[in-house]
Amino acid sequence: MSLGSPLPVAVLGATGSVGQRFVSLLDKHPWFKVVALAASDRSEGKPYAQACRWILSEPMPVWAREMTLLPCTPQAMPEVRIVFSALPSEQAKTLEPEFAAAGFAVCSNASSYRAESDVPLLLPEVNAGHIHLVRHQRLARGWSGCIVTNPNCTSTGLTVTLKALDGAFGVRRAFVVSLQALSGAGYPGVPSLDILDNIIPNINGEEEKVEWEPRKMLGHLNEDSITLSDIQISAHTNRVAVLDGHTVCASVELATPALVEEAVRVLRAYQAPEIARALPSTPNPVIIVREEADRPQPRLDRLTGGGMTTVVGRVRPDPLLTLKFVVLSHNTIRGAAGGSIYNAELLVSEGLL
Image (cartoon, rainbow, N blue to C red; front, side, top):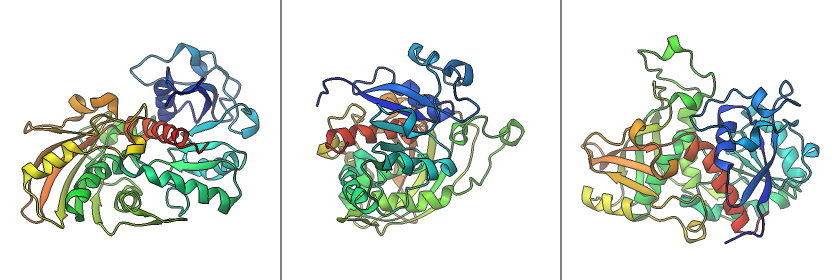
């Protein structure tokens, strides 16, 4: 698919860590052009470079530096078709419906609406068809726009991997332990004296998200809702002293037993649904399986496929269940801003703007 000209888009919460990742990833995007950046009241009216403490290793795009920050209101950006929301959840809960009601497609990184029955929770390489739930959402809520969400950054790589295994063998249950990067806490994030020489074995709300969100994404689309998958998941979530890249150690019970070699073949062969395969952000391959005994590692593997590919390693038999393995996914690219951009591409491709 090609567009005659890039669609005008905006970033809400543009000065935060995920907002910065949106700005970086949208630079030179083939389908989208950022025409508005919005932030909090204290930053409104300032040039982006002045209000934003840029924390990414990539340089701030030149076009963004002098862009004046707007208020987070639909009235401030009438030419925009899509807004990418990096808002905190409490702000997103109020503001995102205002944009959807005003006709904007809201591609949200916030958790506020993920559990709503008529809101798609999307990983296009897993459940692209769920995008059509927005048709019911618009009818039910009287919106001309919509809200589409991406999952928690820890759920992302795990769900991609479970999808491949479930399609081939059936997945009954999973026991998972996360090792989550500091960037997942935003900026300034975790105080240095809390995380140095330490692991924090609790991230508020994360375990519930990791145990529930994959079930929605792996579930069945009905006309007006999603029937959850019956996969059972038990999760432990931990913050570790890694900059970017969430690691998940998983043990799974399969409905049909599989040898390690069979599972590896299935993971490597997995492809996105047909309607998502030609999108600019679709990773190819979707999953890479590393054979080294000590991979994946965040520092070495998080930017595989530009940060959009799921990296799996250490696939081996599990003495209690069936298989165990390690999953790595870039939390602010595939698990946050890149995921929302991917969802917007799917909206456009399916004619749902």
